Image (cartoon, rainbow, N blue to C red):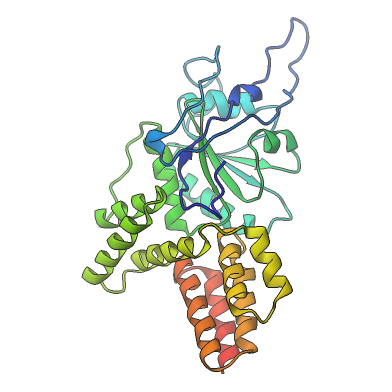
Length: 326
């Protein structure tokens, strides 16, 4: 799976063999047992249209099994029910999987967004909640390397997603892309210019995305969504080619290296640890002055723009920044 900390594409298809997750049919007189799922090799594509696909597991019926309510929007997914609740259901209704755990603080930011969007979807797609601690074999099979992680299954095929916390409008973009992959019509966005810019960003064309966002801002100054998109373009450029682990290690070893601290904050934002990133840079602001302080302040403001003005974490960090400055 492509790592969203190192590539801007958040919508690709991957060749993960979902048939490994099927629950075998029970022998006569014996109950079915959960399958033992293992990880399979995978590859990433640059966009949904040019990506490789996973074959629908053989022997599955042409629609959801009897007794599954079509209007159900949120389900708990386990190793035992994966075939029925995800693979078979996905043949008629896209299923988006949210991998989470009780101890995961970023999960508590992303899950409510997904749950709200699932409710608003009215059954056009289903949100599958996967507790990674209770279902380690599912996490292994789908190569979960960090949480929160979101992927989807459409028509028995894996549609890869993203790791970490994204602003709600970008999560909705992903949901819309999944619905389109499932042949479901999606309401046209209020601003088609923004849709085109977002598409360029999601497919990794940073130059095109930058030009599109700047054009929107020139025509509509103060457009928060365009400002957020432009800030994300800049963020992806800063972390291009960086090794997240090495970046964080360098920052830990060099607390007075401003560039190292700023790059570490970038990595944390894209890893779903925005609160930690904001706190890091507020702390740097407190112990610097002059041009150094102003540079860090501006960097922090650019990260606020990525999240958008309505993000509650941004509101708290803005108060902390004001306190540090005055």
